[in-house]
Image (cartoon, rainbow, N blue to C red; front, side, top):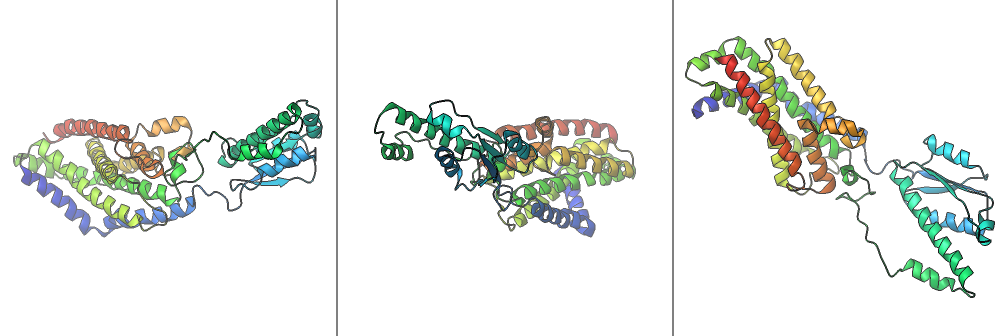
Length: 397
């Protein structure tokens, strides 16, 4: 292999990019602006509103058992308890939750205390939003309070002189304990996604906009390849004993070098943002960026082989970059979109790469945990390189 031809093509591409101030702005300035602005819009991805969501209680019983339930619900950071002035109704409680104005609403019927004292089945009604962590916490706390109340009532009925102090001591310090750990590596409310470990919106926008602008800049270079082909530059290099394979490798590696430099600078500067980190696996971070940058360059080379004019290259390159960014979860976290959209995203290099970042940041996963996603990126790279090589050979021969 004539390494000199490859070095010349790589060096030419690097010099062209460095000499163009507009290119430098797209490389570094625009990504940083988007990262900061969108990170501020996402804000704190776990804290939610400043005031805890409200759990409204409609107490129609007003008895000691009902008061005990309400007291058990109090004192939690995930939600705040507000006892309504009126007894209300189950329909009112449900309507508040359906409207999104309450995280949950509890209706205690007027007969609750009387039924419990008489040994009859006592009913409660809880309306809650299952998509909100605060509502799930409220349901868990209420179920624990109801269970305690049931055991307490059963003990009173079973034995005269039931020792409530002893019961309370055993309830607070049981012989069996359950250790619970949150999914996220950075704490926060337990959530069924990698975003559980996110403490800042920058932890999504930092990696995602780095990936987006690396991809975008690669696809902007499609125009250069098309122009060189139309000007006959590639054919002259071919006649100068440079094989199509050498030309393809040189045109592939040039953008890779620039893309890796761009990614290194952006990821480094992103560390200055509040709450930003990339997890605990430098190996997974480096391998992800190398594979994604290589995939982006191979995709650009493929796109160039289908374009006949610079105008087509600009339109197709920009369209492809926007679609891959939007569908791949670079504009918004994949965890907030429907399941079928997540499946579409994982069929794209953008979706695979941003998922690795979310796993590293939110779950603390490294090379082993992300092996499937990294293998998918490697497979995409191999397929795109094979297609680009086949198409490119036909163009220059």
